[in-house]
Image (cartoon, rainbow, N blue to C red):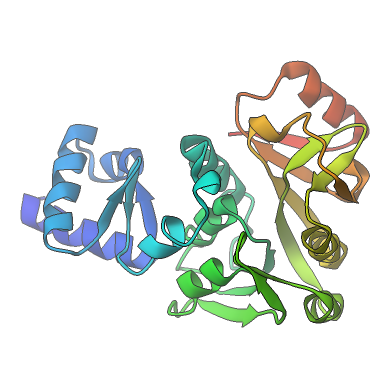
Length: 255
């Protein structure tokens, strides 16, 4: 494949997927990561994509991944990227109905939904909705409610009531803390109530949390460990913590 053909293919892949990693592109096109980085630099100059840490995003999704998400959500970016990819591996072939919680890791997961399948996505997160709205392979449902500036997610009575009427095949939920003693927790009561509703409406519940969240206990508990099925985290999780979770019946996936 000539360089010009590879550039066109990369641009099309980023536009379709929303976000791709350097390592994935190198493997896909059988070139070095240095070659991919040079390709991405040239494509960025043409304003066909935007380079980010570890890869590239389409120009329409840059604001969702960087400017609109709080700076604190960009911490552990590499780990969150791996977690999102591991979570994407749990998606069934052919598509299904998904509940997506707000968060920087779930945004990354949303960008990885295979375009060859059809997905019905229900979310209260404005960045996720903005990312998915133009995609033909996604049927998007945006939940009502008051949008909190800190998380850019809808919360409140209207949000919880709407979620309560729904049933989804998979719910992907974030958390600020996870421990055996306190379960899943977050600082804000309204965020906790929304997460609680998401978990209740998912037939299978997957928690996305990098290893820095393990052992943390925030003010408001929104679920016990028995309420969720899978924890997708990174390889920084302590072995004893992972064993404690697995002893309760939680499936721990290390990205």
